[in-house]
Image (cartoon, rainbow, N blue to C red; front, side, top):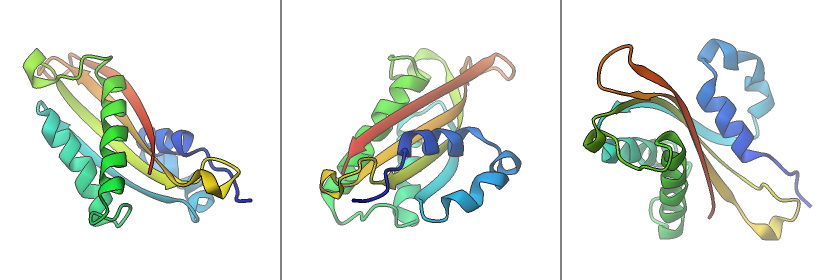
Length: 145
């Protein structure tokens, strides 16, 4: 039996807390595989690419294994649905996002045979491309690897 971890909760915390707010939790995550980043854009592909690039550069996923890239892609899309409230479009709808993101990889079930899963969380703002007219948003996607 392995230790169950809540990859979604960890991803949401990592994405939503500032560096100062995150500091007290950092030692608790020393055995957790994760990475973080930021992206701001009116282009959905840029948002997706930023997350994929971070996961590959940090070694969170093996880009040579299709199933890992595929699992990450679906987790990203699910998280974007939360950010955009089901209308997965940004620039086409004259809105922009400014997001922090976190990717967490782990074993969310007691049984190791359930395999690894990946969680992607976004936290930030979405709104009209006019400074000050955006509002908070959050999205979470989880998929099996």
